[in-house]
Image (cartoon, rainbow, N blue to C red):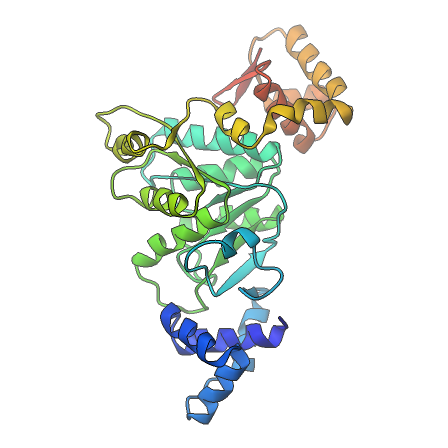
Length: 342
């Protein structure tokens, strides 16, 4: 599909204030966005498609309609996929992806776990999908960023209104590191609280599996898990204290059949990373791993931070994170609160 179709879709999306039902009806009736737009002009309904398109170009926002070859294949599989996706950055990825979501009011332990899981998964080449919210989402994005990996933020607001404002710096970092910020809502769209629940179908839809960390009952993370189930995605849940409100939804998901996880290896097993050590060995990774292990063995302190390792290893941060991730997968190295040890 050419840019003209995307341009006309955008104009109609603005004209109908993002009404999914109305837009879907128009496409079914007229078979193309251009035909639908021209019919609107004949009916006296006017909107300047070129002017609206220029607004996107001025903000470096691209638009991918569902019929476009660049539309994510996984997302096409879901019920009610977005008819168009507004994109800042680079949305494309070819690897299996994981969503990591949870409460905005996360505990320090929950945020640390989200950060650690995202960092290790991302270092192993698995893109991280989340919603840019405070708490678990933010921690997951930060973990992926610190691993120099790809992360995608799905907003419940238009791209000219990054929400929450406190995470604008995180959003900037995502774009700087070849990630993407996406939304199905047109510029200047007046969003509603329900939009955040609706967008959760996209978070799970872009992913092969969803990891739930600290989800209260009736939370957005529970909605994401529900969408993931409907979309035949695996749902992993971290269990927690039965008296903690932050884990009531999580524990119920496990009771209802979601996969309980207690270790990052549970997720790696799902992504078939059992053969990854052999792949790294074929690429000469074993020598790198041996070098890191020797640093641990010769270091005076039992625990070493990644910054300390970086200074001793003579490699770049991205490569170091990949080596550490594989050593963690193999059970050779353990990680706690940002420190590594044998």
